[in-house]
Length: 575
Ligand code: GTP
Image 1: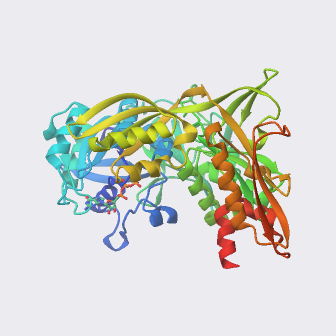
Image 2: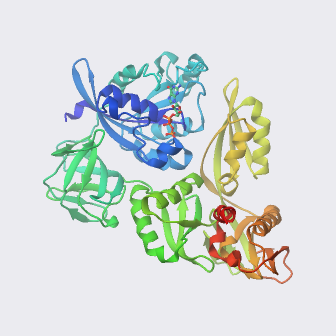
Image 3: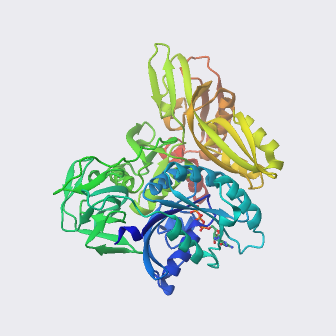
């Protein structure tokens, strides 16, 4: 492919503003998906994505587009919108020269519109502002074009107007992409360098590696060298995705495609690594990706402990396709062998557990998620605690918790409710800016632990669904946190321990003991349930007590399966 005729771009937007739908119309107009094979959100290839109606994975696809008789090759990447998948977006941006910034014409600019725009600017991408959903009667294109133009620094006339539903304006958008997005600037004569931006494990073909060529050419008959891990492979197939995997003889500078080497060992491909030619290797690797920092941790345990090796294997394979997932083995007295996993947020955690179930047939128990804490003991040793059960016993000098900077966009009538919500969550207010006469952007600094759990749901309900939220890590602060242990028949159940703010410890204890009282089947003898507050095991420490008199033969009381409340509730109902 002639490098000057390549245009690589991604579609970025706030969640639900219509990226996948606009991508559908592009696929259709370009003619690469036959009418009878077209389905909604074509590029959301996973079942979970189709069922939930959200994009989880970025998808790259090549589409042809002709302007004035010249055929251009467009490399399009559809990206996810949810804040948990920002890392997916950042990797996609590194494979493009341009970004289509899509904004719902009925909603206007939202929190992830801004965060994605800033990321695209950081990557020096050409930005094409577009209003979508102009077919809706409630669309206010003039008003939002003004807003968007103000944000980007263009004139409102330059903001395109399209409908992903009817296809209106999509041709103009494609023409604009050809005009505004620069051709890739890699050196076609230099030794080959390709960036691995994603990969996936295919049970028949082994690892499929997605690459973006920077310089030179990679040939399907030539041995490949992975510069970071230092391995050499024979390629079995090289190709492009259009809309399915289509083999080609070679990939040249600027092209986006895939490589299959037949490797089945997951350690043989790493996202962010550079592929070069073994015969004529490049000397310096491309700049890879920074490993993302997990936001929340949770323990994952197979219901059937014999499945532990399968879980390890499944996590290794899933990690290929989800570079943000981290995990290390852990053991729990109550739950046996499992893994402590780090996630970018609760949605990410939910998706990982669901994918492990669907794609690998694993039935799992997850423990309550928590953030990480740095705990300094009396003797000055610092513990990095990702698991409440590792919280050091004995006296504690200081605890430090992670903080986030949050940006909340809301109609101005909800300013009061948002302030109240943030105060309840130990938030510290920063500045407040008006985006337009009716909408404001509020900045807060909050503890991560306060924001990852129910904050977003509460924000939505207090603002009738109108507010949007984006956040990123912002240092740490000292906090008055305590560990709460749950004891059943005097025995501490490690999987139920939690680290919470001192003011909320009592409420957590009451909530847990109450819940257990409902869940544990009746026995003929009394089962004491206790919650104990404070790290050490001092005899006089405060505790919440509650008892369950139950009948025999229901010994599930302390069985591992009860660690996940929703699961045991389901069981209780079916029993
Ligand atoms: P995520 O990838 O999950 O962030 O969502 P998305 O931005 O890809 O949005 P998606 O394409 O899934 O569209 C969200 C909803 O808006 C769907 O119900 C679409 O049918 C609808 N939608 C998208 N574009 C249009 C449009 O132009 N007009 C109308 N009326 N509805 C649209």
